[in-house]
Amino acid sequence: MRSRPIGFLLATLAGATFALGGVSPASASPDAATPTAPTARTATASGDIGTADACYTWGGTLREGSSGEAVRQLQIRVAGYPGTGNQIAIDGAFGPATKAAVTRFQAAYGLAADGIAGPATFNKIYQLQDNDCTPVNFTYAELNRCNSDWSGGKVSAATARANALVTMWKLQAMRHAMGDRPITVNGGFRSVSCNSAVGGAANSRHMYGHAADLGAGPQGFCALAQAARNHGFTEILGPGYPGHNDHTHVAGGSGRFWSAPSCGI
Image (cartoon, rainbow, N blue to C red; front, side, top):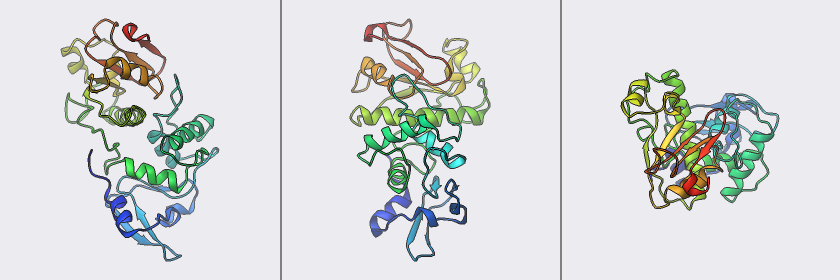
């Protein structure tokens, strides 16, 4: 596991309580949040110490009816908790599906499961993410063994990279649900040329940044395929599906296609 964000360590060592409402002027709005470059500790008006996360800092409570960038950032982190067979939209609108995903995330980590994202929920997310916003157990490098700049796919480089980030948070949720045992990622994003070189399908979701190919790891291919149904993956291909006996393929995106006949899927 990689190191925790500096802000989290500082807060833990100092015994400080997070004061999310006083991180920055932007936090005056319930939906405001401040992306921050370095981790910073700042005094609030009440004299408490607020800790800004090095990736992203929420500045207030979010609930059904909230909207904006703070909600969109939250949706990325709870994308792996949509319920079996579903996925949530990353659209910045806190609707019933987002509330249900937040509730499942909270329950998964032993928090009060009320679907309202406040300090306890955000503190748990801060523990789970690194300074580049990836979850602590996955990296951009794992999700892109094709090139260094995410270019050449079916979408812009920025979109491919953003899709891969959502995929990583889904995998983080799946990893936790499977006992926090490591999940092996053999590949993710492919440019059109990389996809062609490995004989990928012409419409492969790898070219959109949505997909990851998983090694057996300690879980086995079938356990991975079965678990993926609960964590926002709309495409699951595994043992018994042509060309997928040696890995489990998971992906997001529109539509749903699951096929791993040897695993009962």
